Length: 196
Image (tube, rainbow, N blue to C red):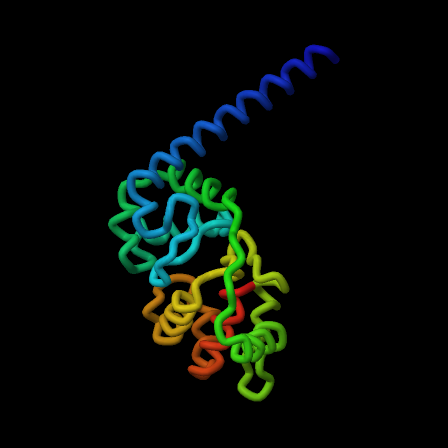
């Protein structure tokens, strides 16, 4: 029994050291490249780039892999080109470990409309509730992004890119939803989520 406990303790220590090494490697990558657009802790102030703090690790890892393979098009294609699978997983773990910060909602009346659409959808146009996939707290899942606290401008751009299929990955479901949203609904949902 003691031998089993010693083995389990050793495995735990090795796993903890490996995770610390991975996070240190991720921090080095962030310091060299990622911080320029996303900030050192994933809380950038430029609304063109997504906030990554608190984002789901598996989602970040998948998006980096999609950028590397060319499945998703954009500025990140060249940034992801030199990353290996371990780097991508480490970056996902690094940014998911950073706390997402709350942000002030601009135009609270418009954000209230966005909250309604997020929670209930629009039965007249056939838009499904965003919360049915991304969750009531907009925290997403391993396969779906955390939307809470994201820049409104970034969210607007992504919804429009899904609609026009400029967003080249993960658009099977999102294109059908985004195509039914009006400009006002897109703005409203984005404002609501940016302050969540």
